[in-house]
Length: 575
Image (cartoon, rainbow, N blue to C red; front, top):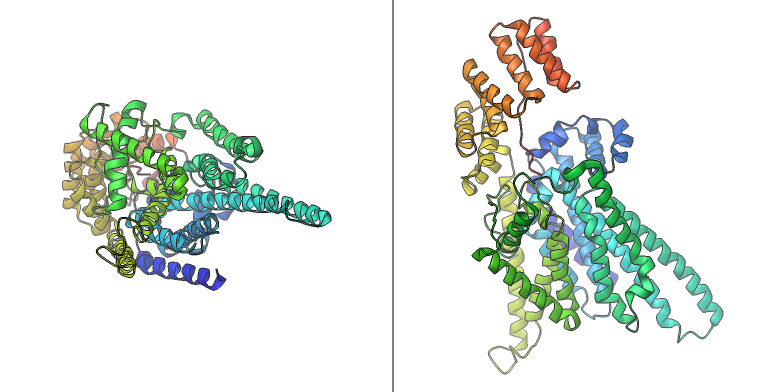
């Protein structure tokens, strides 16, 4: 196929992605953005890059990109959004290229890659990964993940090409030289693949599934072209480094970080209850939103499911079993469909298995699995558009009419996805609009109310509305540390010092070593004129966290007899 057609496809994709995400350029920092970008001192100087990059278990590559963003544009959100969109474009192009190489013998090989890339690029469920700045981790990791797979494919395509010429080449010397050059290029692609795998792991831990995907890709698309020879016997040395690295990484991470490095929500979930809950999340939340992206929610209210024999769990297991059977049945007939299904489930494993996380569901976790879904949906639409026994030309419609119908269906899907993405991006405009939307969709969950209260207080100055939201959150979850602390700040701002102190004291019982609480208690003492107690609390805050800037500034203000103190808000982590 002509290069110009590929360039045209990629250019159209770039234009469409830019069109649906252009309204995000001025969207505000949200939730974890405030902690890990605005509140991070490490990213505010490029001199910290060596320290960032050597901390291999703290997503060093992600933090390095934030440091570069900060060095260029400071706290202006435009640069951060531009990088996220550029990465999303790059991921979509890689989907196109990977499928193109996979279907290189197909005369219309550009149709499936183009369709799958557009479905992925415009899908509304990806807005959380692209628009929510801190979720760059998902996009950045996916970029290197796919780039690693692409290099692996390139290496094997070259290798298979040389072997297929062995019986045809006439000049042994020419074959020897060609084989030597090809081996060098193959080695280069394989080393590049391994390097990009490491970069993917340095962006987000979910990339640990890449060796399984590499193995499946080899089984589905490469080993069958090599006279049926076993991939384990012929290419173990190629696949084994991926498997070893993927095995070693979580083990070392566990010994360094403990369960926080793998799954740290064991106080809420056991491995079994988390797995049961995730079976339901995969079918009734993730797949539902992928097929029908309506009512997207940054903080869905999903409760633990404890019974393996609940109706929803049994239905989920049956559906998953049937999907796996379909994948097996299509292994020979249409490996693209089979591979897409396996991709979806394999890439969900890090967050939807037996390692408990605090949030059982989050849309940004589906960014990489959505690649498999997009390939599946594009293939399914293509199947409908082929001339099969279900729609013969002698029946209800001609082949031409059927093709036009499928084209209209595909355009309608893309149009609806695009409109939903644009609309969803407007909801991410600021903290108030995001959390008002979330409170409507998760009214019985404490965190959205607490986050909305924080937004009302600091974005709009609506202290009474903020207090009302904090109290709703505490009505749902009475010992919610963030809501208690932030309610105390709001009451302090209204001049209700005794009420504020009461909330701080309750919060302090929950987290006695919180520098934020000691700082806030000190402010109350200072406002009451109890200077010695205020000084003691500020110093206690600094004993716990010697580099705590707010406590340092407040202690300095106190020593100068000034009263312009800065309270410490608490923001519950989302990511």
